[in-house]
Image 1 (tube, rainbow, N blue to C red):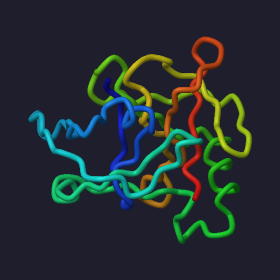
Image 2 (image 1 turned 135 degrees about the horizontal axis):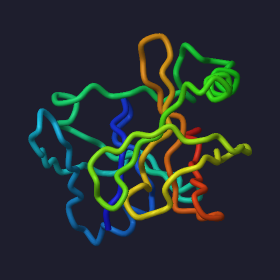
Image 3 (image 1 turned 180 degrees about the vertical axis):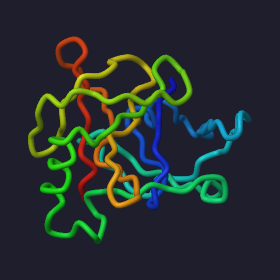
Amino acid sequence: IFGSGVLTDLGIITAFHIYRGETNNDQILAYFLKDNDLITIPLGKPVFENRDKDWIILSHPKLSSYFLPVNVGWIAPEFKGKEEEIFFERMDNNLYWSFGCPEGILGLIWQPIYIGHNEDYVFTTGFSCEGISGGGLFTFNNGKWYLWAIHSSYYLPSLTLVSTFIKF
């Protein structure tokens, strides 16, 4: 099983079904491309999980020395009280991007078409194939990247990507 993940200030956030599929007390490895070198780093234990919404946060003891973590939009202090307003304003103005690793390709970024949302999920056009799960839906605001949702394993009609909002 392989999938994507996002390095945040809370830990690596990925889809829970990737973690569940990989763990039988085995070490989970993260693969990163930095300066054309493939870096392999073992991930730590779960920090927080939401099985019902298909996401999990894993600790990353060494990663912050290699990469700059992104912020999680739903808990960013600068958005306090206006999280949804900020997120949907960015969506309305096409200021959002998606990331994933379809079929194991390292780091594909695209701008999906926003279809809709409900309280827990956002629906966009995207790839529904192995490797996308655990990737993220991001916005860029005031010089920072913010993660809002993690691509999940819920399938709808062809080319509809279901992403779970990262809310606590």
